[in-house]
Length: 166
Image (cartoon, rainbow, N blue to C red):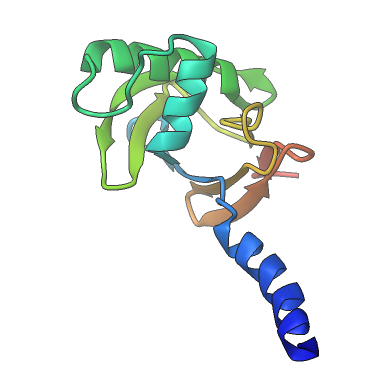
């Protein structure tokens, strides 16, 4: 009986931990010298994005192919403009939303910042999904030329800063 009780006391927390959902996004940001733009690809789990959109904008939004894709793009663009802030050389930049594509478990969003010349510093503030999911983690991989750096952002630390010259 004691062994069964110990087994239950050990197994319950382990089962609860394994049932916990992870909240995670990944952004790859690359500076393209030829086009003078910072090109970014962000992967977000579609169900998390859908939940945020239904809470913030409209309960009928579906983040899938059955929903009007132009409307969905408008919501994604609106959301990125409020939660994904890029500054170059200390100045906030305008995001250009390019579009999205659907993958099996996530949505791939494409954005860029155009007309960047001589970047000395790039800062990305990424608070995507953090207001809905307190445990949200956003990874940013930032590359400018041969300089590469990765950042793990959370609610307490939501900015990635790459300084290219001191």
